Length: 333
Image (cartoon, rainbow, N blue to C red; front, side, top):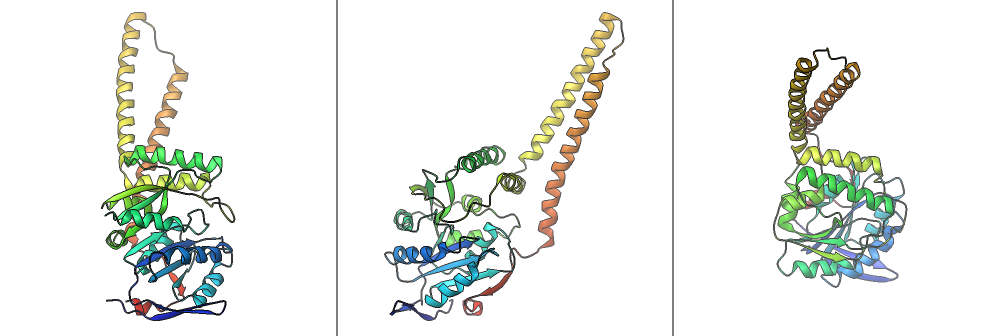
């Protein structure tokens, strides 16, 4: 049993005793940028969660944000004992920050959401009501994404390619925003592989799942850090980590080229005996050589990607390093 403490909340002369002997609800929020959004995020989360339970916690994970996010998190945790801050030693990435928040979460139900208020706290109530129908996972579908054209196009292209290689049939309207039962969170936390994708882990572990429409808002501050280059790198990492179909594709292409070469050799022999002349196709020969060499290098590169992932895994490094927290981690052990 995890020991709990009693805290208090003070704001504008108001003081609320908050028993936290049992945490019913945890909200995990990776924080990168958007420091000015955190005050509004806290207020709206507090208003929404109090309609469900008084026994909740808000876990804000600072992923080495370039803005003064950690200072804001520390201030909020002093004002509200239910705000728990985790400060990572460097920028590990969104999904690693989510992992840190899940590892420290204590609630029977856990909500994962972004910090930029595109995931609206008021929708948590809708997600939780659906979960009470017997679901372990309820994820929000962004029916009208309030993102730029190129980000939506890049996201759609990412999932088309990813679905082809992994056969996951992942809806591009899905994000991380959802409510997850404790046994789902426990299963996800048991997966300590280096390549992290929270949404894919939640899909892979199974359990009874539902997807419902939620309202999606425009960003309150800044811009998304997922540009085209990062989306391509993310797609490659996830494809290599979750599927060997890329290896099979190179095998199929190699087999197809070998068969084509055999058929072409028959054609050359047939042409030689019919026309009686030599084959002078210097251009086609050079094109074939360069094409074959490029394909071989590509295949070696694909194998190298998988070997690189194996190398990352066998090193056994921690997924993240915590520099500081606003609470005593020893009391949670």
